[in-house]
Each structure stands twice: as C-alpha cells, then as structure tokens.
Amino acid sequence: MSESFRGSRIAACNVTVGIITLLFALPGLPSSAADTSATPVPPKLSMREAVRLTLDHSPRVKESRVSYLSAKSGLASAKDLRNTDVFASVTQQSVGDSGAESSASGGGQLSWRRRGGSSLSATVVPLSTSNLTSTMQLQYTRPIFRGSGQNSDSNVSIVSAEFGLATQEDQLFMAYQTLVQQTVRNYFDAVRTRDLIVVSESDVTIAKETVRMARRKLEEGLVAEIELSQAQIQLAQSEDQLVSRKRAYQDALDQLLLTMGLNVGQKPELTDLVPQERMKLDQEVLVNEALNNRKELSVLEFGVKRQKLELNVSVDDQRPGVDVVGAYTKAGLGLGGSDYSSSSHWSAGLEYSLPIGSVSRRERREIAKRQLDQLLVEQAFQHEEIKNEVLSAVRQMESAEASIGILEANLTVAESNLKTAQRMIDEGLRPYRDLLDAQVSLTRTRSSLLSSQIDYYLALVGLNRAIGRDLADDLTGRATLARK
Image 1: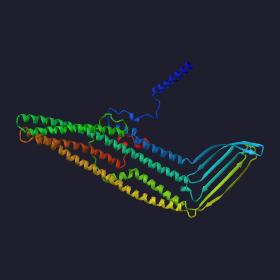
Image 2 (image 1 turned 90 degrees about the horizontal axis):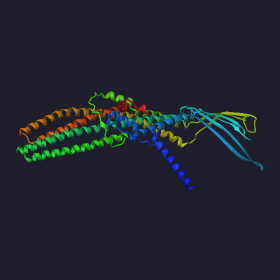
Image 3 (image 1 turned 180 degrees about the vertical axis):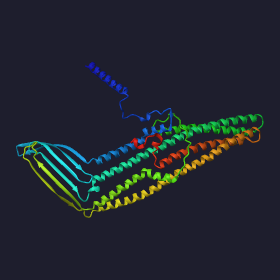
Image 4 (image 1 turned 135 degrees about the vertical axis):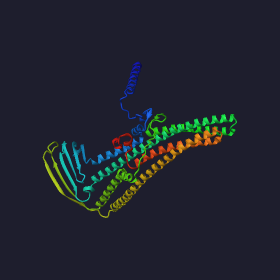
C-alpha cells in the first residue's frame, strides 16, 4: 500500500514539474504579470526613441488610458437604450387540505427607451404549466411636458457621458503632452550634464597644464610658491567639479529612465545634440493658434453646454407632468398551462402630475444657475490664462536667444583672454592669478552657453505645448489620439 502511494506521489510531482517546465518554455503565452519595466534600453538612445518608449511604458500613460476607456465604456452604456431579460419561476401552493400543487413558467421581457423620453416594454410568458396562464403584455409611455425631449433622463445621461468622455480625452491628451515634455526635458538635462563633463575635462586639462607651467616657473625662480599653490587649488576644484558632474550625469540618466517607465541603472548613449535652429515668433499668430487648438477650451465649452442642459432640466422638473400611456394584455397564448382560452384587453389615457412646494426642486435650479455662471467666468478666464502661457513661453525663448547671442560673443572674448594670459605669463608680464581667472571665465562661459542653448530648445517645446500642438505627433510622427 505504501509503495503504491509513494509511486502515485512521485508521478504527481513529475506531472507538476513537467507542467511548470512547459509553461516557462512557451514564450508566446501572454502573462498579465509581465513586467514592462524590464524592457531593455537601446545602446544608442535618441530623443525620438525615448519619447516613444515613454508613451509605451509609462504607468502615468496607462493610468490615463484606463480612465479614458472607462469613460468610453460609460458612453456606450448610456447610449444602449434597449434591455432584455429572460426569467423563469417555479412555485408551490397548497390546494385545500389535500396537499400542494407545483407550477412553473418562463418568458422574457424587452424594453426600449428613446432619447426623447418615450419607452416601450413587452413581457411575454409563452411557457407555463398547471394552472398558470401564458400571457403577453405591452406597455407604452410618452411624456409630453416634463421629462420630454432634451430634458429626458435618457438624453441627460447620454450628454453627461459625452461630457465625461470629452473630459477624459482631454486629460489623456494632456497626460501625453506632460510626459513628452518631461521626457524631452530629462533627455536634454542628461545631454547638458554629459556635455558639461566634456567642458570639465577640458578645464582639468588646462588646469594640469597650468600647474605644470607654474612648477617649472617656480623651479626657475620666476614665480612665487603661492602661485603654484593657487594653480594646484584650481586643479583640485576642477577635478572635484568633474567628479560631481559625472555623478550628476548618472542621476540624470536614471531620472530619464524613470520617466520612461524603465529600470534605472542602465547606461545608454544619448545620440541627439541640441538643435540649433531659431524661430521667428509672431505673438498674435501664436495666441490665435492656441485659442483654436487648446482642448481645455473645447472641454469648458462642452461643460457650459452640459450645465445649460442641467439648468433646463431643473426648470423643467418644476413643470406639470403629462404622459401618454397605453397598455395591451393578452392572456392565454395556447402554448401551455391549464387554460387554453384566449382573452385580451387594452387601456390608454393620460397621466397628470403637479409638483407642489418642493424645496429640493427649487434649490436644484438655483445650484444649476450658480454653477453655470461660474463656468462662464472660468471660460473667459481660461482665454486669458492661455494667452498668458503663450506670451510667457515666447518671452522665455526671446530671453534664451538673447543670452545665446551674448554668450557666443563672450566665448570668443574668453578664449582670446586665455591665450593672452598664457602668452603674458610666458613673458613674465602677468601673475599666474590672471591665467587662473581666464580659465575660470572660459569654463563658466562655455557652461552658460551650453545651458542657454538647451534652455532655448526646451522653451520651444514648452511653447509648442502652450499653443496646443501635439508634441507626440511632432516628435514621434504618431498623434496622441491615434494611441487611444
């Protein structure tokens, strides 16, 4: 008995191990627990590829997309004005003192609602047993005043769902733009730090050469020992700055990878340089483009339309209600049951109702009116806010462009000053302090020029976002709405 049991356990274990091995050996099987952050980064990473990876893997995009799809499902549900149910029942009832009798029936119910408020329902019980009778019943309702047309519950639900979808679509678009802009900023922040490393390496080379020259001059008795000490201090500061910038570069890379939704610690090579093209800016054209493109305005416009409908509904809710109603019932369809005789009757008429002294209805109207007034104020303010964003982005670009022009001129002067200081020191005309100052000035000018060039391009990206252009389309060739 024990040997048989042991053998069955071994066989079961072998089967389990085989199943697990098979599952791991099938790469094509989908897994809901797949870790998208394990996606490797290309060895050479362009800005375009970084943006594409962000839009494919960032959790923020996926979160916004889920909300958008939920709103889309909500609109589909609101537009579904038909309902179908199938039902069945089994009953048991006493019959005098002789015992109990069982009966069963089954059928279905179909109901239709129109966006204007009318409704029709049909209930059919074609199957029955014992003393139950098969039946068919039709009911029709059409509101004439209150709750009809655009003020019907069905229309209000659909319009509300449309507004919700428009809002989620705007939020999805803005989430894409935010992530694209953040990815571009993080990419060029890493590029900035990488290029500053090159500047620091050049600075260290110059500093080492300065120390070598100072030591030689000291040995020749041409300079004081303090000038060698100053050169050595300058070299130590340059080397410390180089170490700091190398660390900052890895931090910038990790921040870029985190924004992309990928594992940090990887070290791709960033291939893109800072774009050098310049733009001519027409503020009036850019502001008009922003007012035509910005989705916040279309969402606010939809919100105003939705709130006007809410106000109309709240006013309509205080009106008398008059509904046209009709019903038709046929009992005994001849498909089952104990009674095969057929009978039918119909009814039609008007139903009237009048709300009296309802505080909730009156307050609902006042709330709707206040909210509509507030939306109209926000709509006007949004125009000014967008205009301010565009003008601010234009000023940032103009400031960065002016800085670039000034720093390019300063770079030429700083390079000339360094050469002059080296020549005059070689001739013994100036102290080494002048050479160190010229070196520091050149390093700062190079760093500032590089930062200004990157700031100009980032300001351009910010301007494109401010005027409502699709950054995803501009940088990847695939529009945001095509990714939904």
